[in-house]
Image 1: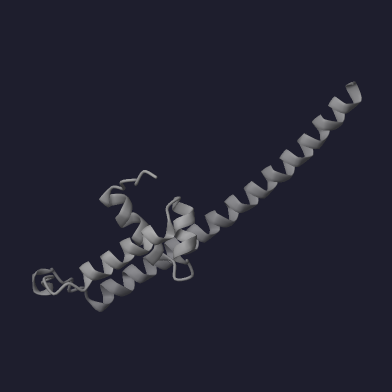
Image 2: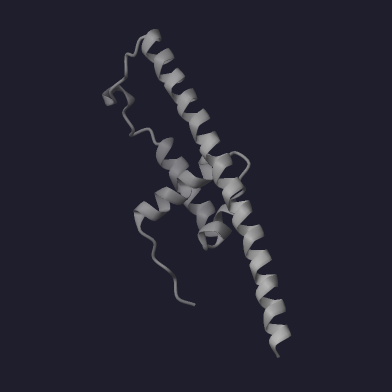
Length: 118
């Protein structure tokens, strides 16, 4: 079996995908990405090892000194955006359901026409 070589970006994205959803298992994430679960598990371990590495100097990283008002404004903006996205998601789900019903209806109609013409 030939070993596949994945780009560092793909590996980082795969690890980020796994960490983005607390309910997502390694097996589910690997299946979604089309990779072996053990491969993803190794990438996650390597990412944790890099994060825990003592060579990482936290003193050099810039720290944001946002004020309470700035943080509250950002939180309000994010909540507003989240509400808008939820509304859009509901609209898209409704449209999708309508299209599915229409597809079934027209497929049944076409089937009956084809059977009737024979």
